Length: 186
Image (tube, rainbow, N blue to C red; front, side, top):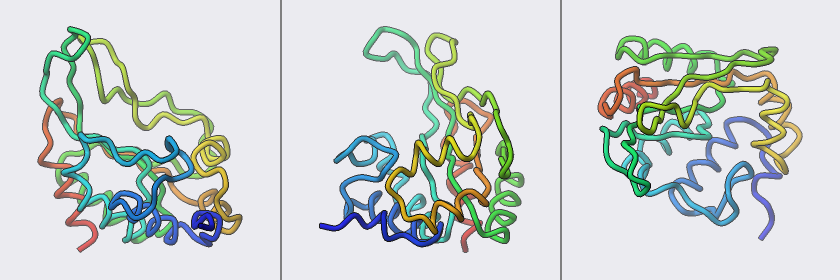
């Protein structure tokens, strides 16, 4: 089967392909482990994630909010609900920002030219940061890492896009971010 990602000519087409990956119709995407689908913890988010991808917010990483729980390693883990990805459509970007801010969600928008942002912790173990969102080394490096093998027209559009991160500031809460995203694409 031909690589559908190579044929993508826009960020919108990448979003449609990402939705297909989320829903299991494509086995992998360029920035993820080959043949691996979404993590089990995000299964309940697939409907909203697929919808926002089809609308043009191409999500590359997401996680639900999870209350503090003892993990496999004996440490206490917790998560903030968070999502990040690429938006080329300025009207969609404005709608997402508006809905997120109304819901009390942290919005970090990296426009082209941003060279570095150290990020915001979204997962911790025993109170120590473990995972960060909104972390970037700059558009070109991030695109090269996440979108290797994608069509040239889509890559050029990504380079002009906004890298958008949304984070619920409340640890463990999982009922604000996702409805805000759904409202933004209605």
